[in-house]
Length: 252
Image (cartoon, rainbow, N blue to C red; front, side):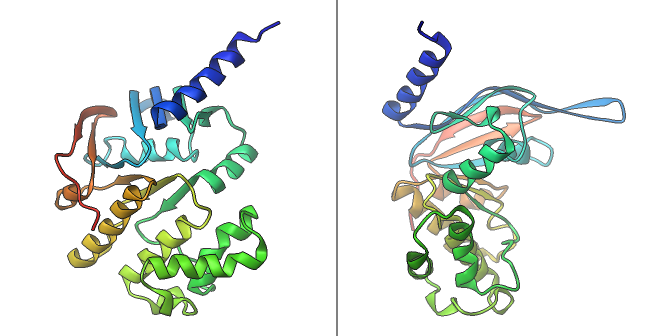
């Protein structure tokens, strides 16, 4: 007997591949409860992100930006609605499944870098590969060095993170996020801790990754970075306030 639910899911996965959709949120809500009160962090958000888009998520503090990226990366779960990445239902995975999925599908770049201070830069970049056993062991060091070369800091490979400038640390963090070749890169205020010149350099790098085929989702409050995005999604009070395609976007 045909399982119609499974059949429908297979059709939806095929649709995502053929239409180029990488991320889909359908009626996603997140409600937190504390002290007997309910706070609606997200309210029925529906959103599609295509492959190779470079998308900015903007909004004031409390608008739902962090909640949205936590849901997209599987760090948190929606109260209602569905989240699909590459056709997989993120909201339906167990913690064990999420760990495996996240390691191969999503690269995360943090505002404060989150590099392990006791490891060298190249060891930090190798860490996701070691954790997920993503590449043969003999290839990992060479791949990490190639990523650092691409990010322009190969000479920093054997230094500790504390010996690097902020911009160099952020480049190392981007290299680490790319280690397992994920299709989706999520950056949470990646320029918030950098000076203006370095911030533009980092955003240019992220935009170039989208040109090369990655889907890049960046949470930012900095309007000066608009030129790097193909699209801007503004959140307000937990909902999508506006969703605007850029007239032009830069990759460098």
